[in-house]
Amino acid sequence: MKQPRAWQRMLSGRRLDLLDPTPVDIEIEDIAHGLAFVARWNGQTLGDWPYSVAEHSLLVEEIFGRMNPTQPARWRLAALLHDAPEYVIGDMISPVKSAVGPGYGEMDARLAAAVHIRFGLPAVLPGPIKKAIKAADRISAWMEAVRIAGFSPVEADRLFPRPAPNLLAGLEVHLRPPRAVRADFTARHNALLAEIDAG
Image 1 (cartoon, helix red, strand yellow):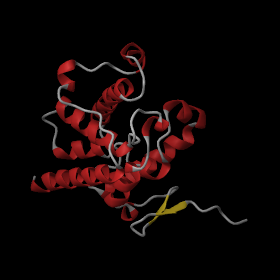
Image 2: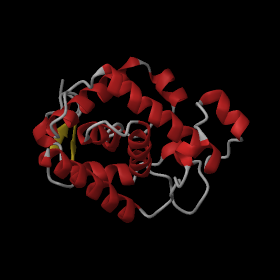
Image 3: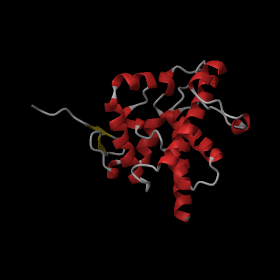
């Protein structure tokens, strides 16, 4: 019996095997493009543009930097790439992930490891770094819930930690065309790589 196709052809021309991904088949342009077209909150957000995973990733990286100002650029890069696997497997809201079971998480972990290796990060992030990125991710989720996803602050407080007001100063939840978000995500990735290379 013929095995079902498990690879995806990327716009870069790469063929990424979703079950056994390799770092050589991962390109930042594919990640940026894919994430700019993946909507968070299943698209249930205010505005004329979907709120993309790429936009969310930029926000999480900014929050992570504010919360951890002494961390080196490599961990800010890890924060920017924290949802990178979603460029090929999409963004499932938490209730759907629970219903799907461990298969989604396992695929996500394999893809994340390949992405990390491709860009010079450890396949599995150190526990404290992963925890710090998750904290920034949850604060971003609170902001998004209240500002664009129709949650009241009280309702959001039950699901996510309410951030300190000073942490949010000047932070916005943007809704922009995919082209603009894709360009900013790629530029931020390249800037962080340059900072890492500069040492």
